[in-house]
Length: 231
Image 1: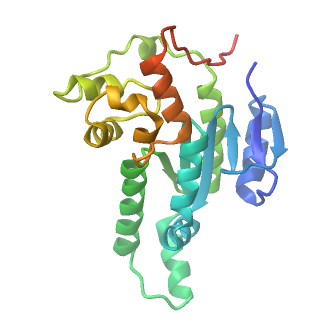
Image 2: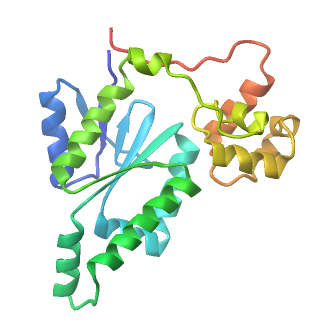
């Protein structure tokens, strides 16, 4: 049985209304709950959703980066959904007396999304409108709680570097190659990573992933992660 799709009780507007409609059509159970961080909770995954305007505003104020730190610290997987047309954003900005161009906004958007993915290893989905954003959130919830496809289950991981230590670390859920390299630069050795104090110095490595990594490196028993699947 799939977990409920949780919407933050403070969330209002066309996006959450669209999510509710599409989730009901897909046969998903939706509930309202006060979330400390994020707008939507899909089992063990957290989703933050922002319009282009909200993205820029929260990025400039620094609030976005604090939100990502909190999601990283509390969830093994977290996603950012950005929605909105660049054309409409530019038209609105010009109407409000701002001197902007399509290329300038496009570059800022691409740069912000690239920074999100590189600094936080946050998975980002960008779409043109609220309907597409809602469809993605509902579909993501569905896919996160389905068994892996035959193709996915049989896929072979490609070697991403010449450092076998980094390749080994990158197999841990939620740790990408860039974070693995940061860990090796800071700690120097796999052995040093067994200590919580060493891992706390690594930006982009949240509490949940630090705990999981130490358990993997030090446990004498098999370390497993539960994953709910549809029967």
